[in-house]
Length: 420
Image (tube, rainbow, N blue to C red; front, side, top):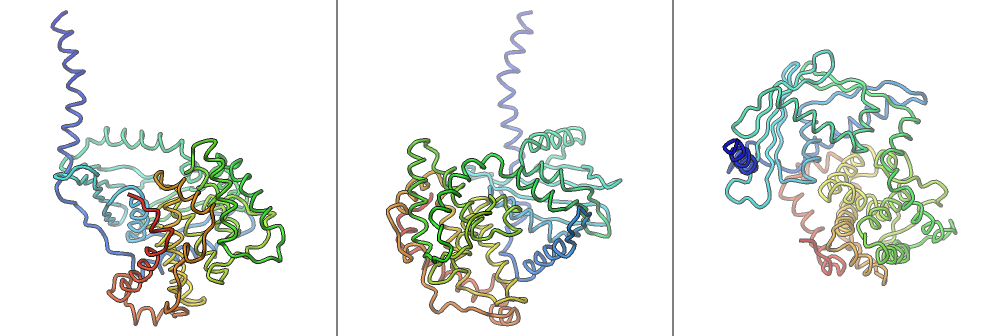
């Protein structure tokens, strides 16, 4: 009996050590998949085509829609998802009815073996995804254990609103001819339901800032500079933070309201923004332009909901879309996007959220918020972008972005507040 008790105690003590050792053995000094270069014009044009597929299938009643993704499309989506949390690389291949995804995640604080290399293989018999193989580092995880781990992850994800929305919209998905096909349901009612699920927790807080913004903009004919609109709102956020101690939540709600005001159309529910009904038309200006104020606020919100890399990518996507058939590619718009994404990152970082409230509440100028846009090219069609800048990783394009980032970094707001 005493021997059995000792053995049990040793097992209890050694189990965490064994788990730690096993995890260490799965790590590697080198990534299986290298980090990717920035997205190209072609990547963003493909994203544009997918979005247009969704829009062109629109109907007033509930309908079934279908999107078709290549392996490259899935890589882009996974990269945007993972880069919120990790330095990472992703590779996806699809052969007939089998999909293989490989990812390398850099684990912070582990200098000698920092990379966790993962791989999984899926098939879709009867239009239902089935895990065929999972690997972690050099180890192949037995299929029952792998499926159990995946089930546990999905069980945890089921409590997240994003997962519940996806479950309510997606009908089936399957692999065919080297592509992933996704069929989903869509209607105005389902879009409203998705918004309700995503924003339910923030609705009361949103209402506070909507009321304050409505009070400030009660005269719809009055145009204001954005730097006049922000101080009273951030003063309210600071006052509430002093009472509840949660500057990040206050700033997140405030920037959501501002972004919904800037873009109250179909994009608002999809981004989980609060409804901007009963608010006057958006007339705020930045550097004398309404479009720059809109770019700034939408990018700030994207940085809040994702990260600044996602916001910057979305900004470039919008400019490529404009270059195809709109007003043309604009580096001035990109300057507003990148300043807005930096602003949003500061707004939700625990080290800077309250300091940002205080700085904005005391009053700012446009020279604090947004860099000058002189000598930044605008109205460029896609063929000129491709001719002059080749792709989003070319030396000339990177030099233009460095100029914008340098101008942002020299502004008082971004010099004063920095994140680790």
